[in-house]
Image 1 (cartoon, rainbow, N blue to C red):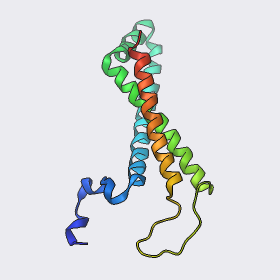
Image 2 (image 1 turned 120 degrees about the vertical axis):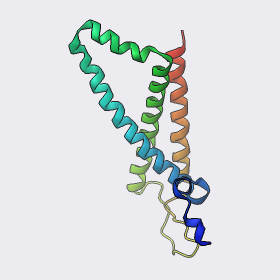
Image 3 (image 1 turned 90 degrees about the vertical axis):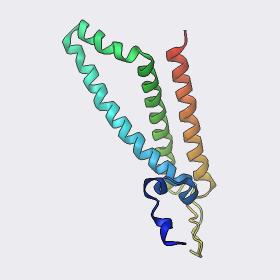
Length: 143
């Protein structure tokens, strides 16, 4: 290992070859959580516009009936499905489901808890989120 390998910055932090799919799932979990928090706050504000009457409600609701609004809502659907699926995978892992047997930590250390079952869970969460986003777009843009 050279001394410059640890100077990757942000690009080095998200390099999937260096850390694997587990790091990508970790980052997606954090970003989707922040995105869903932002959506929750915006949704509370949007719903409070009902207090402005029918005119105020219709004005604000018109923002979501655009192409950009539909794409944003599809992203929210994807974030929600991924965050839920990956969260279930993490909860099962913490409960011991799908965790491998402990092994002697010989170099190079390959943790038994990060076995193929967890990777299947990560890929399944990503796939389910993509399918849910496509379905949401089909419903919003379909006739």
